[in-house]
Length: 381
Image (cartoon, rainbow, N blue to C red):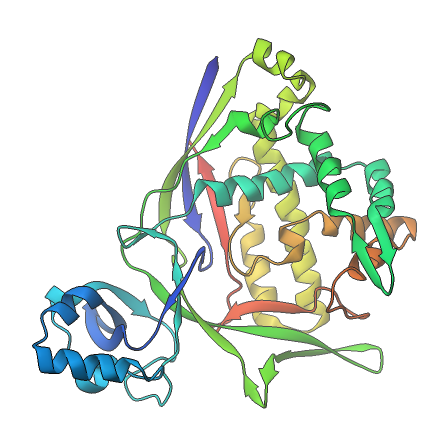
């Protein structure tokens, strides 16, 4: 089997969050400050909970456990300074969390190994598969998508089994186990190198507004009169991690698996071109949204990253906040509708519980400083 290995530098263009599925609250962190170059910056110290608790005397342990029964308990109320020996790691704090604030929210963790952040190869590969699927989809294929949408009672659904079979036609043999006989098996992407220091960002959802059938700007999503915010660990913008792409090619194996006709996918130039084309359309789509609803900071961001997206070093969106258009072929279906006057995208929209006639998807996740999440650039050696 012939293997080609391509080293790839991944540069974060905006904060990236790949969630671990876990979070931690104010009983596990304290606010502090630290010197960074010539500046003093806000940081959050994550407490080594087990070590800290184990070194307390018995009376303090009992009191500590009692305090933990209060979900809003802040460890810094009793221990405002945590020494280095009890600090798991420090995070740069770019959110509104502070020692003086009345609230102390939970923070969603980025996926880590030994408390170091990384980008999983599976996340990169999943985003690339979407870009390739987008590239392979023909007008005839889009017309066939309408056949996958069914009405059951008062609900519109996509037949999931038929949809998965539809995707398998592009990547797998017609017979046998679709995962075992997929061309994507022969593309391997390593987990990235690590980043030691997370950056905590405050994230909110902006929602498109419509008044009298006309776009009317955006507003922050609120519940009970309060803006809903989340707090996440990220690999901050302008960080670089390394990964490796391995393309395994064996004509006999591909032929035996009945996927020899899909071997062109195992070409790094084709992969880069597919990513570039998909991201170009996605950037244009996001620019249209930003201009339509007069979101100047998004217009500025997407105009700025257009110059980064090149066939030789394309940009890609991965992780939290990517949204429907970055994780599916819905954008291509919408483009087809606009050209042909069909309503396939509207049928897809009806399969979602939350749907809006004037804009779908309606919301975008952005940081407090106005950055959309999860854009990276791939630079291949």
